[in-house]
Length: 443
Image (tube, rainbow, N blue to C red; front, top):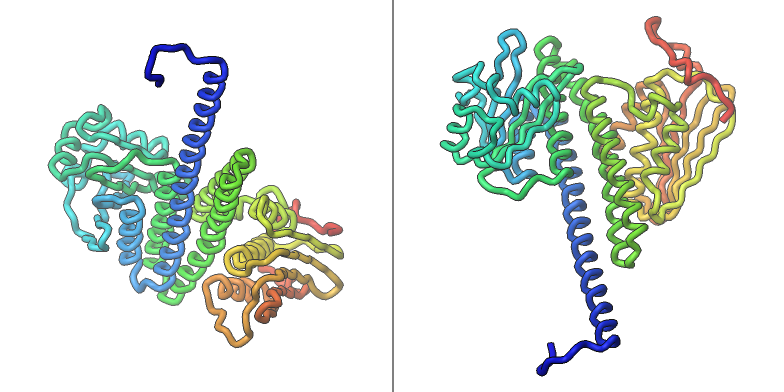
């Protein structure tokens, strides 16, 4: 503004344009930083929630208590008023409430709510029909005006102070088995990352439900073994996958601080892809399928692909070495070796502060050897190494009849070696089958 009427000169206009561009750039950069920070917080929350669910799954004495704690975790992570678990009864076409909980961990297995009182009323609700038949999450931003809600349900939500809700399906064997509903009094609109977190945690709830079903048909010893297997699989898929997500988000944050928007966008795309892979692995764990990476590649190619995609754009330099001809490996061996490699990489990224990570595969007449090395912080031999990750490595190697060696010293890095005798390949059960795509090859 000028004190007297006048027209701006070309020089004035040029300065104004430059200032406007700088202001626009500053606003855009601030918005990008805020969005990145929000995404990073969600990713960290995902890892914390999944690690917590892993600990509870491995130690809970009763599967039902695990369900209650998992729902409380969902409630806390998504700032909910309450969370309810409903299971679908296909013969009666009814939805029955199993339990309801809040963020404090208070839960009740005998609540009597709308869908229990009127088992068929939910069938009039297009939102729940969408969830059941399309197996997609359903978002309701306003229970008072959403046309998908039938009158009975709208009245119930208004009576209980629920203004918004998210309903996430839980599925197994290709069928929707029920849903988890997260209720809110007030909250901002859901971000895509939050919906994905709800889906990932819902899959863990489905794992617990399957575990309960197994427990009803098996002895207590079999139940404990299944819990350990599920806990290990959760750790080796989702927790490791989201470690890669955080690494990429931190790299993007650094790129934004250096005003390198192109590099930041590349890291964000990579983080999104890793998150999608982890969600896909969660779905596959429910169906007890092979890891997605092994559907098209043998374990060595799959491991290289995972290492490269997880570390792209980071300061960690990777190297792969292979020597000899690897025979046809049982699918279980391939999965075990892939998971061991993932766990070693995850530990390097989280704790080692390493510059280099080397993966070496060798095969001779007697044995197959997989070595995973970094030049990071290392640890002393007297320190305890009984975490879920290393315990899972030992269990996997024992299943294959092999030997696990862990060598490390403070400041000298860590070396993990898996040694598998080739004669163990011939001790498969008669019903075991090998995938013809995974035949012998010169590495």
